[in-house]
Length: 101
Image (cartoon, rainbow, N blue to C red; front, side, top):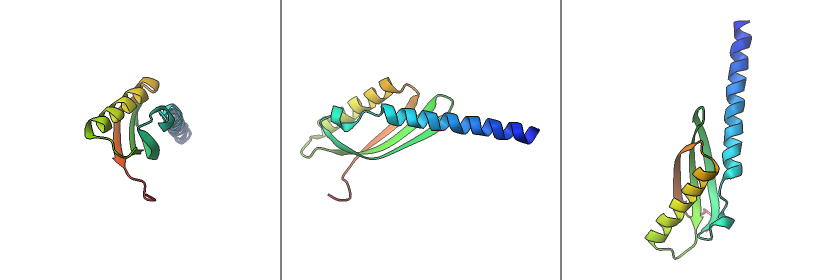
């Protein structure tokens, strides 16, 4: 019986983590809403605990942006992500160049 309870709890926790990760992905501010961001190269979400998610992403930025424009674009992107998905406690956004460029 104890083994069954442990399995049920593990399943509930796993399902909650999957639902949270899907929620973050669904709420993710897609590049169409940010003209400086051409595309999302990768997105990783990690469930840290109940209601605590870490997001790490690489984005492809438009060419020719100055450092201040890059910082502003990333800050706006992160602010919108947190507004749409308040369980995001940490976000790490890395500008990058796609491997096919």
